[in-house]
Amino acid sequence: MTDFPSPDELFARPFFFVGIGGSGMLPLAQILKGRGAVVAGSDRSFDQGRTPEKFAALERQGFELHPQDGSGIISGDQVVVASAAIEDTVPEISKANELGCLRLSRAELNSILFNTSGAGLAVAGTSGKSTVTGMLGWILEATGREPTIMNGAVMKNFVSPERPFASAVVGSQSLYVSEVDESDGSIALYRPAVGILLNVSLDHKSMEELRQLFGDYLSRSRISVINADDEEALALLPQAKEVITFGIEQEKAQIGIVPGSIAEGPVRQAALVVDRHDGSQHALRLNMPGRHNLSNALAAIAGAAAAGIPVAASVEALAGFEGLARRFDIVGTNHAAITVIDDFGHNPEKCAATLRTLRAHEGRVLAFFQPHGYGPLRQMGAELAQTFAAELTEEDILLMCDPVYFGGTVDRSEGSERIVRLIEEAGGTAEYIPARKAVEDRLTNLARPGDRIVVMGARDDTLSEFARRLFERLS
Image (cartoon, rainbow, N blue to C red; front, side, top):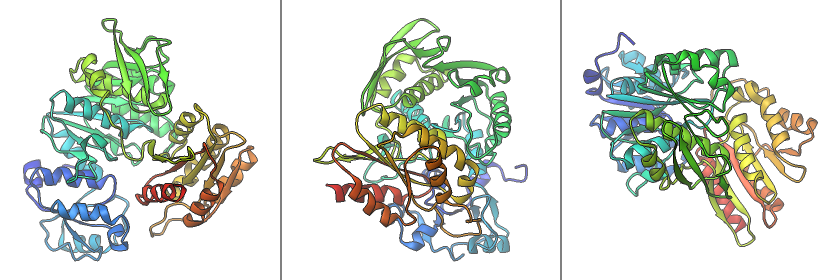
């Protein structure tokens, strides 16, 4: 990163985002535009006519959109932001190389914004990052701190008619809240004032690699906030400097829950939060179900405490937290009490958390899972199969279609049919239906009164459209 211009010089230049509609690219484009930069971009989904409302909203906000044919790259002064893995044969990259444009990955750009802010608050872990980033950002906003927030998901508290896809908030440059990603190793780029670690579990990398990445992350953080309930996260505590711990089960956690105080419901919950620094107790009301979301709330409260926000103020703010799009997002419940839920679950831990939340309440579960790529399916397929077999009962049914594939040279020899076979071998009930339209028809025919239908997967915005269309058919 030593060859990059200074931040002032960098942000004075025009930016071009390849894949501007992506969950990691869009919030960065919004932050740069909000700070006065000229921002344009292209996206394969824009060319293919997918999620047209998203791109219409971007055009209304003043983003210049181009086809993905290289026509948007016109000057060597442009800074081209693209995935580190994108091939040089993509027209924009070919043109950028020809003109000598500076190229940044999403993580490189985000780390520059993060590290040059007054204080960067980072949220790391293999599950729950977006939810905790949204919660922490909302606490800081509600308490008047005017944070800038970079999230991978739409935060409902910040949605407006002008900004229907509010995955970023442009606040002051004194506080920058961001989820940071271990899957590509880019977590190593960040120097946090506050570094939150939620959990350490198998996702895109081996456990050995994850322990190294997360341990180094804690050692770079001025204050570390660590989940005491997660054995792998807690084992890294010796690598941290100053520490605040949080946890539901671990009674020594500094931010915790009064035993026996949790009241769970199908769409919300309540509990008494205890600040063991002074023994004070605070009544938390959370408009999200699931034990994992209670843990997420404690992480946000502890992260805010590290930034100087009193626990009482954080608990009060979270009562008004509306959640994130595609995080146990209830699309609706019809006249027959059939509920459709849109969810981002895509790795074993996320899927398990969602299914446990559903299993805590009555009703059969019909789960539809679209894997978020052939590569991730090879990496964690066996663990996913074990998760579905363990978390679903005999009467529940899992349906899987082919993984997300928008083009490229990825090896597609192993797909969803292997996972379905592994689930069946483990005693679960699963069906492989290659095409999504056929899945929709099958779910419509399977559904009966009282069922909960959950649509799970990542990297594909059209899953939300699928969930809405399914609910319309059932209604």
